[in-house]
Image 1 (cartoon, rainbow, N blue to C red):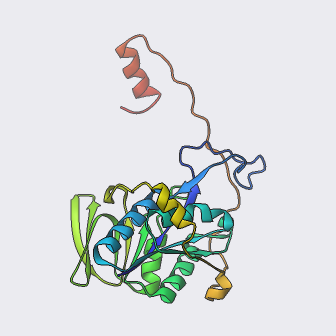
Image 2 (image 1 turned 30 degrees about the vertical axis):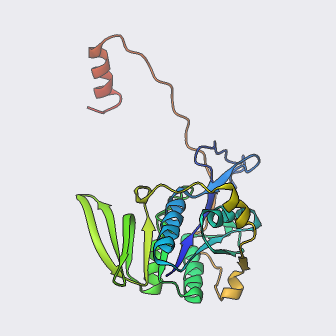
Length: 249
């Protein structure tokens, strides 16, 4: 079984993000990065499937050479090889990301494409759906359980009324939710092995992808600072403020 799986680098969700004074981006000095948590779940699922069914898991990402450290984490978790497409993150939108991933799928021809359901930096939740549409493949989003059997992926997913289980024929596109699994921590021997695993670097031009954007970010603005709270002396005063000021009752 051959599985493509995304390994996107994102800013550390626990880091304090500061917008540049001119609004052209965020301050990157001292900022830490990590693997997108949803991609970690997808990687764990891919590696676990290969351990059970055989084959290979291939980690893919888009970015400059800086992202390779995080891509090596995917290799240390158990992926056999990795592919990086050279383009800066600020030159991407969801559509271009999807078009690049589509070309990687067409090149590798995997049985399954696993993605994190969204990236915690942009929170767009668009790429998996776009990839499935462009490839005209069945998709199952927000997976909290995946079982491969009889040429199908049986996917459990949470919906607004409870739990839904669907079966999609392979090849298919599946996006991983946090409830899918608990990602493994790479051991030191596997971290050392990951340094020797193959990492291929491609360009959008080599893949035949037009890098024109459909969405352009024109400015960044920090959210307004939260105002301090107040103390009230009585329950009656609290209720009055909730009704008249907060309009919460």
